[in-house]
Image 1 (tube, one colour):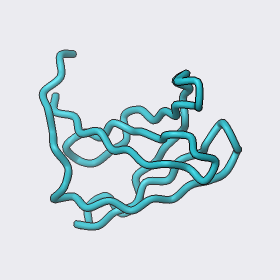
Image 2: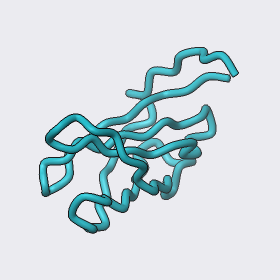
Image 3: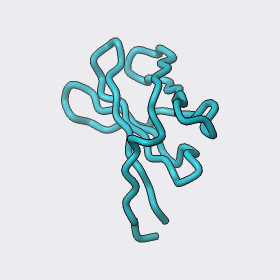
Image 4: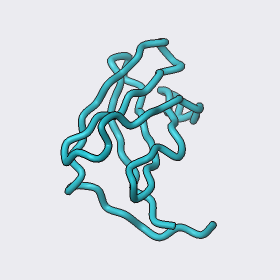
Length: 82
C-alpha cells in the first residue's frame, strides 16, 4: 500500500500529522506535543477528490477543531509494508 504523510501546526503549537492512502482517505491522525509525545488525533479528509482538499483534525491538546488545506499534486506517496 502507498501512503502519503501530511503535517501542519495547530494554534496551540502542537504538531499535527496524518497518513493518507492513494484515495486521500485518512488512515491515521496524530499530534506531537511540546515534549515530543505522540497522541492520537482524529482526522478526516474533506472533498478529497478535488486537487485542493482539506483535512480536519480534532486536536487533543487544546480541543480545537483544526481545518487545513492541502494540494493533491504535492503529496508524495511511499510504499509501506502491511
